[in-house]
Amino acid sequence: MVERVMPEIDMELCTGCGDCVSACPQHAVSLEQGKPQLDEELCAYCGDCEDICPVGAIALPYEIILLPPDEEEGN
Ligand code: SF4
Ligand code: SF4
Image (cartoon, rainbow, N blue to C red; front, side):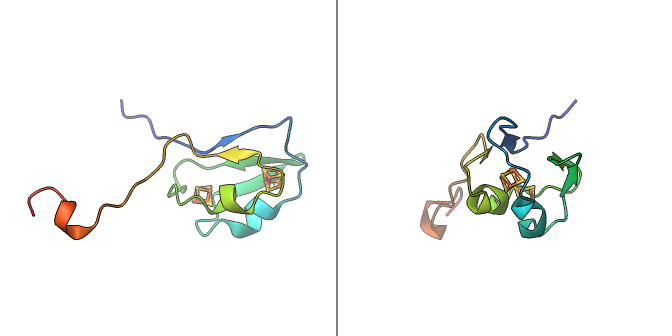
């Protein structure tokens, strides 16, 4: 079974402002009873929700590093 990596939300910090809902380009976030819920089928792990959250409640557990073309495998 393949597990998808999802952004982590600290519900203690979250104020329920909804900024992450409107920021998500994949429409993967919704507010339910004032707290954000992520749809792992839709999330593209872009980090926009992490960037927009005013209280730092969202964190992506892994950092995506893009290598320049000459450092990619096979080049
Ligand atoms: S990481 Fe990107 S796609 Fe995933 S929930 Fe956040 S804003 Fe949406
Ligand atoms: S942007 Fe941050 S504080 Fe606002 S609802 Fe999303 S996780 Fe909660």
